[in-house]
Image (cartoon, rainbow, N blue to C red; front, side, top):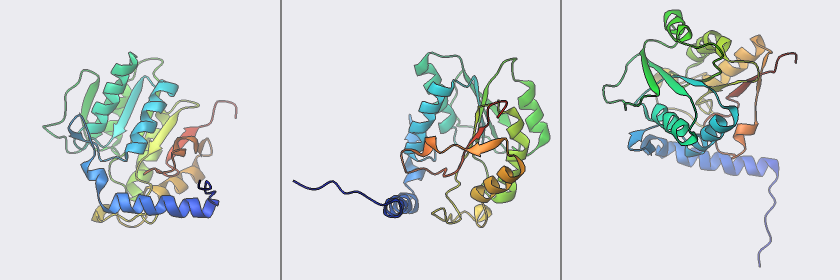
Length: 225
């Protein structure tokens, strides 16, 4: 009979980071698919996303960065399984002709840092909508910070905004995608939080230890706090 190991916080972090690096540098995220469509995600984060949809019950998910449309399809299917009202608006400057079609999904062609794109999406919101915002387009600091400054206003009190790929630039991995090298989403979050004390990092969605979005789950403080 073996003793159950008890890891210090430093040892646990070292082991998680090692698995994170192995998973990332083998590009397993590049081969992750939902119903045959690439999602470019860590499956641990996808699991957390369905938990968030179920517990938070956002009426709309606004996704900046469509890529192949796999995440939008995943979220739409989660709404289907929940039997809940909900829709997904996904934005990309280069829409894919092969992106999956689903009655809950609306594709928006435009830049996620263009105020005109923001206004088009904002104008489509319904009274009482409770958006969940996901930022997953370019991941360099300037671009993500511009997104945060633009889209945070749609997040309701107590609601979430998810900044993806805060793991790059040494947190703990590095990307080989040139436009995202150097200061990235993690550093953008730091700058944004310094400007917006009404938001804070919610560590609860990181409970599975492995996430591509460390310190990337941002919650707007409830009204009056």
